[in-house]
Length: 272
Image 1 (cartoon, rainbow, N blue to C red):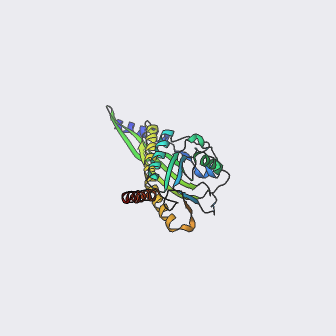
Image 2: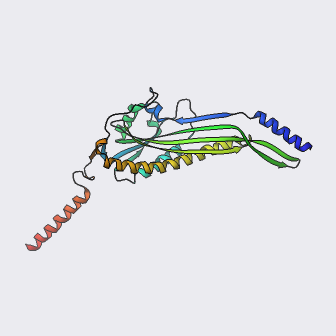
C-alpha cells in the first residue's frame, strides 16, 4: 500500500510540473517573394518557356526570428533529389543547385532575377519548410519497475507537424507554374527525462517523411505540367531552342542528313 501511495504521489507531483509548449520553425516563400504584402499577387502575364528549360533549385532563407530547424546538409540532399527528378524530363536542359548564400532574406523577385542572370535560368524551384511542435500533458503514462516497486511518470503528448513545399516560378513573368507540397504528422510520447531527445527525433523524422511525400507530389505535378503545356498552348508562350524538338534542326535529323549525303557521295564515286 505504501508503494502505491508513493507512486501516486510521484504521479501527482510530476503531473503538476507538466506545461504545454509550442515551437514554430519556418522558411516562407511568401515572406521571401512578397515581403511587403500579406498575400501574393496573381500575375496576369503568360509564362515564357524556351525549351529545353534551364532550371535552378534553391531553399528560401529562414524567417526572421525563427530558429533554423534544418541544416544545410539536409537542404542540399533534398535539392539533389529534386534535381534528379527534374532531370528525367527531356524538356529540361540543365539544373543548377543554388547555394543558400545567394538568397537574401526578403529578397523578393529582385533577388530571383539576380540569380537567373548569374546562373542563366528560365525557371526556378523555391523550396521551403514549416514545422510546428506541440508538447502537452498526455493521457499515457510510463511505468518503471524498480527494486522498491513501481515508479510512474506521466507521458508527454508530442505533436510534430511538418510541411516541405516546392514552388516553381517562371523567372521572366514571375508567374508560378505549379507547386508541390509534402506533409508529415507525428504523434509520440516521452518522459520529461528524454523529452528533448524525442522532440529532436520527431523533428528529423518529420522532415524525412515530408520530403519523401514532396517527391511523390512533385513527380505527379511535373507530369501534369508537361501535359498542360502541350494541351493549353494559349496559357504558355513556348519556343524551341536550336536542336530541340521543333527547333531549327534536331540532332537526329542532322545525323540522318549526313548519312544520306554519305550514301549519295559513295554512289556517285562508284559510278565515276
